[in-house]
Length: 450
Picture 1 (spheres, helix red, strand yellow):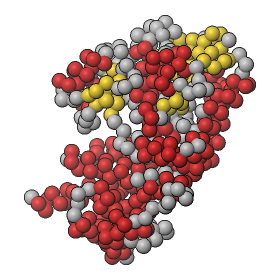
Picture 2 (cartoon, rainbow, N blue to C red; picture 1 turned 60 degrees about the vertical axis):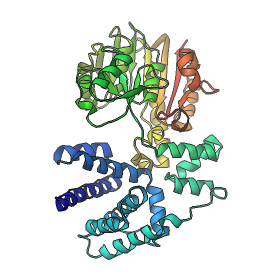
Picture 3 (cartoon, helix red, strand yellow; picture 1 turned 90 degrees about the vertical axis):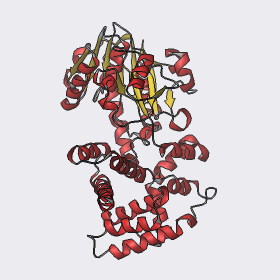
Picture 4 (tube, rainbow, N blue to C red; picture 1 turned 180 degrees about the horizontal axis):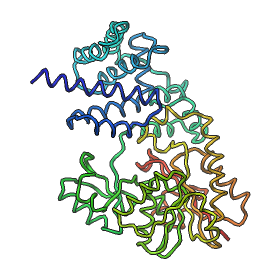
């Protein structure tokens, strides 16, 4: 029994290794790979937990892990084959955060590198050095070089740290933000107002063994205490809730969508916000959902059926011109760099490049120009992103308003002072931040057509 247990445990670490190789070399997404893995192969709940914890933990703390490897073992990992580096990363993470004995970590290093004859002894010696010296590693001096310290200790690319220091003008704020980004986010769900309310949902989930607590800011949200099996509950099957971060819920509320309106969701994707808009409208009026990818609109239609959202109409983007001047509200949840959701997608901070920001900003301006014409006189144009990059947020909005004098900005707090007062900046924008609000990072602004 003991040997079988060890064999199963090793399978989990081998899975972690293959996943990291695919994510860091092939640019593939962890959530998709994990879903495919757990469908194809049988893992116990304990093994699944190990795989998920190690993959996301290593991606969150990758910078610090690599620094420890090089300064505790004196090994130079630059230039090594990625699989060798990832074996050492797995064992370093294991030594850093788990209660595994030094012998157990070394045994794992030997087992994972068994097929790497040329490097197996190197891996073993490197991991031994990490175990021996990891607690004595000296990190860059915070006061002398804030960028290097935050980048290494809190595992964010240096160009992102530099960018945030320029925008926030405070190293302490940037360090707090990066620290929050490395925390595991909670499972936050949103009650479907077409089927239930938050109180009833909380009660029904409690009966199914899922305790929860209300979100602080959104009147529709619950933070659920455990994740495993949540999609197998009757509450989910009956369409009573959707998984949606509290910041994302607030952005949908910022639209002020009301029953009887015509609301355009210009970048609907798989439809999480479209479903919420339908609920806020109580199925009265129309939500017109656009997306360039037909597959995503297909997912939206399936989700809408389960949610009982009957007033959503999906359209290809080439049909947008049919709705010029007809929308009470156009909601643009624009494609962006995702800097506000690093805690959920830690791989993205290593994938993102500076040039991406410029390219995305140009795309966002194009989308605003294209869909702003759909807003009728007196209607609302709501622009939102899940990033905290000024080039993609404030600068995009200011540029649009300078070119379109028939729109003027409405302070976010005016949409609902009780909810949005705590998120409204001096300039009137909506902004949620992980280190301040405990939500994902979102930006939003409301513009009204004269």
